[in-house]
Length: 235
Image: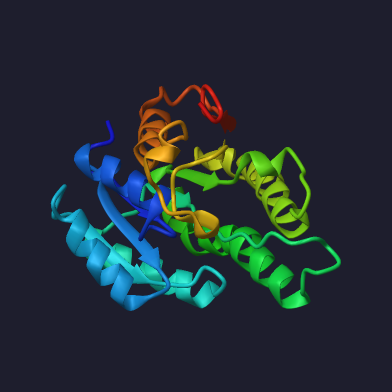
């Protein structure tokens, strides 16, 4: 049973995070989500209330462990428990390695990789109480390298390794862990503006339905790593 449980989604103000929040709310799960900008969080919290009133928007930057700890504290104060954590926040900067600045490298590593650690570190004691589920959103870039992708590839390869190792650490507490590695998703990522030309891509709702399906699985099974791609690229 997933109804009346509570999920926390980082990077939930748009794209994949918003799609996951929408689907979970429609299926009876209370949702807390975070973003870095207060105005975005407030707008999206209001938008999500059309699906359920059981939603909480939080301002948090995953680069800060203190921010994430405060977010989890607010979730417990509001809902009294935390069952599912979806570490989704991420960014991409795509340049040749000789042109990538140390600041750009650090921004990607601190957000994409250290951020998933901060989110888990802040929430793991609550997940122990509920025997919950920890899901990270990596990318097919976590298995396939490409030109101009040094920083992004490094961060997403790292997320895959981190989540797989965390899965082994946490299963003794009956906490399940899954890393999802999507291909092209119709979002605003990397300056894209979603339109009809993105119809062939994975849609944010598809990501939400995948997460929902994972959470509904029998507790005896664990899909620890999932590659998720469009059926016909550039169709």
